[in-house]
Image (cartoon, rainbow, N blue to C red; front, top):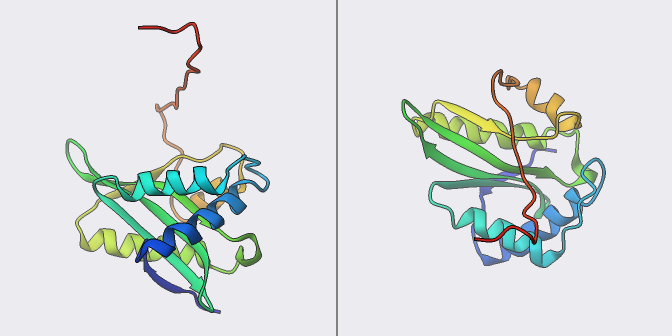
Length: 155
């Protein structure tokens, strides 16, 4: 079944549906996160309120089945798009929905003059294979660094 693709969000109800999808997908393996509807809605709201936001939703028979969301950013020599989130309902995975979303995104970005797409994913997650099969490469010379903010940190 071919998904119907449209901009995300197209109305305020989309954020509620998107939050449910996001929570359900990322609370399952391999992510095993602890999203609530409230925190998922806040996350998606922050992303759609970011300048340069662009997102798409995939629906099957009127039900939200997947979404991709991120931001277009200007860099020193080119315009890039940062995929912040891509998720597909577990009952619809491996049916081409994520591929359809990424293809639509890439086509629209190409028309907008964006030269490249980048993203972060877990090194050992199945998502990495999905992206690599679609032409994404692990970047040499880059590292994701993070630091916990401890209660002893003060200004």
